[in-house]
Amino acid sequence: MKKGLLFAAAGVMALAACQEKGGFTIDGTIAGAKDGDYVYMRYYDGREAFTLDSAIVKNGKFEFKGMPDSIFAPKYLTYGDGTNNLMAMVFIEEGNINADLGNNKITGTPANDIFTVYNDKYTSFDRQLGNIQKIYSTDSTLTDIQRDSLVEAYDKIMSECMDFVYAQTEANINNAVGAYLLQSNGFSFDVEQTGALLEKLPQKYLASSSMTRLKEYIDNAMKTVVGKKYIDFSMNTPEGKTVKLSDFVSKNKYTLIDFWASWCGPCRQEMPNVVAAYKQFKNKGFGIVGVSLDKDADKWKQAIKDLNITWPQMSDLKAWQCEGAALYGVRAIPATVLVDQEGNIIARDLRGDEIAAKLGELLK
Image (cartoon, rainbow, N blue to C red; front, side, top):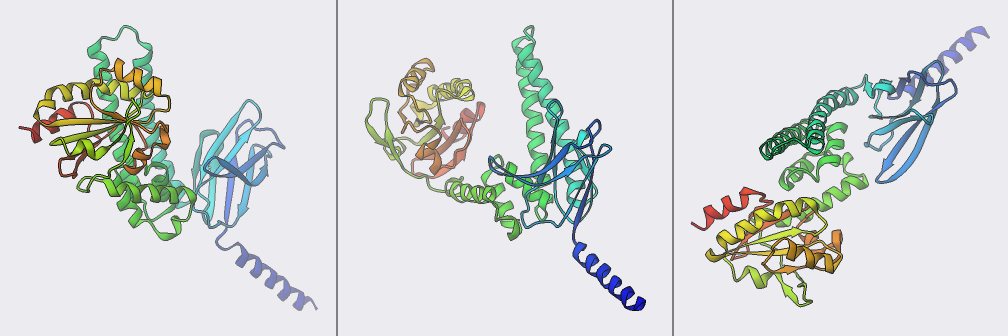
C-alpha cells in the first residue's frame, strides 16, 4: 500500500513538472508598497487595455506565475496607491523574471535582458534631448547663434538616437524585442528600411493589429518611394476649383509636392525655406503644389497669405484623413515629394537647405 502511494505521488510530481515546463515566474519588488496592495499585469492593443492577472503585495514583494501566451507583444506590470503610480514593461517568456518595479528594471530572461540594456541607452538619448529642449524654451538670454547651435545639437542627437533604435531593431528582428521595436518605431524609419525589416520578421510576430497596420502602411508607401511613378489625384483649390496634380507636374521640369497645414508649427517654420527655393528656381522650370491637411478653409487661406505662399494649393479639407496624403504614405508633416516632368519620384522629405541644394544639382 505504501509502495503504491509512493509511485502515485511520484506520478503526480512528474505531471506537475511537465505542466510547468515552459512556464514563467515573475518575482517582483516594490519599495514602500503596503501589504494587500495589488499589482496588475495588463496588455494594451492600441488604446484598449486588458487586465490579464493580478498579484497581492506582501513584504514589498509580489509574484506572477503562468505560461507564456501566443501574443508576442510585451505586457505591463502596473501599481498605484493614489500617490505612487508605477508601470514597467515585461516580455513574458519561459524562465525566472526579476521585476524591480520602483526602478523600472526587468531582467532574468533573454528578451528582458536585451531590452533593459537597450532602454538604458535610449533613456540616455532622451535625457540629452530633454535637457536641450529645456534650455531652448526657458533661457531667454540665448542669442540667435546659440539657439541655432542648440537646434543643430538636438538634430545630431536625434539622428544618433534613431540610428541606434534602427540598429537594435535589425539586430533583434528574429526575437520579441525586435518585433516590439519595429512595431513601435517602424513608422519613423525610412519606408525602405521598415519594408526590409518586415520581410525578415518571423511570421509569428505579424499577427497583431498594430503590426498589421504597419504592414498596410508600408505596402502603400512603397508605391511612392524614390524611383516610382507619382500617383495623380484631384482636390479643390482655395477658390473651390477642382484641379489635378498632373495639371502642374506636366508644366514643370520639377515639381515639389508639399504636404503641410496651417495648424502645423514645424510646417510654418519650414515655409521660409520653401519660399526661398521657389523664388530662386521658379524661372528655371521649378514649381510647387501645396497639399494642405487643413480642415478649416478660412485658416488655410489666411496661412497662405501670412506665409507668402504664391504657388498653387489644393486640399480636400479632411485633415489627417486627407486622401492625397494617404496615397503617399504621409504620417507626419511637413513632408515633400519631388517629381520630374515625366512623373518619376526623384526625392522625398527634403527639408531646409536640402531643397535648394537638390534643385541646384538638377537645374544647373
